[in-house]
Figure (cartoon, rainbow, N blue to C red):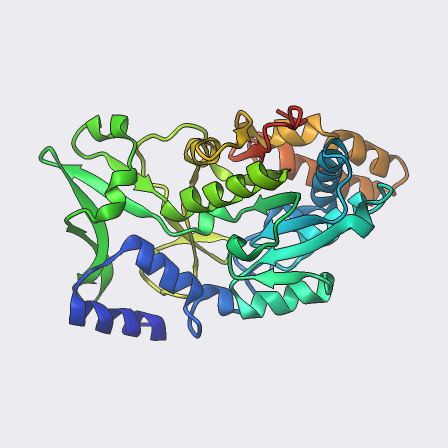
Length: 354
């Protein structure tokens, strides 16, 4: 067992099973043994590759989308430029490089990172040294804001519920033999977040809710509704909530058992974009329809950017550029699995790409 597994086992033996949400939170963010305290998480040498690590074209295109929103906002100065879960800082560095070419944007943008990991904050500071760091969005200053989150919501802890014999039970984490595993318990208060229509699902169905995604979405949306601005959320997930088990662990770019090595693998679940949109609109913001990443990126100019880069590149570089474009947009790569949602102050015109 890993050191974290021993800690969790002692906790469970002392006070009983813990929720899956608690298990995920400990595995990802334990101050000593959590996954995001590791040195190498992203990239070929890590466990997974995000879109900004695939190609700088991704961040550059997103940067121009944000700059467009800043222009239609009336070019406010200052404007909070906020990223949730910034990884190694790659996305923000690319955003600033592209959007910084828009007159006035570089001087107006004040970068704020939402990041709880001290190890990742250090990496982010290497690429964006002038950023300000926050543990959560609540401490971001008042004022017009542009917000981006790429593969942030999928790492927020979830609760799972399974229906057996006409009753719903919570899928918690307890001792199973000599290790950790799923056990069934009575649902806790978070069960109230399950959409009522899903409760009619047949026996054997499994439902997921992510309280953190709902509350974070509402907090950001209330800020945008009060002070102006727009947010762009990109993640893998589904547009309409439905029964299904999406909890997964990833290590060295391969799926693995989430209970084998707690703290040594990435734990995620698919994002329910309809719940994020509902939370945003409940506090006065406007949510776009959810669209697929491939269609969104091509609509806002990724294909044009790739073509221009390829025109003046060597044959080898052309092959790399086209490969990156395919990785980001093709249906059998990231193009359809990943979804995109925009949330805006209702006074803003419709966001491009949707």
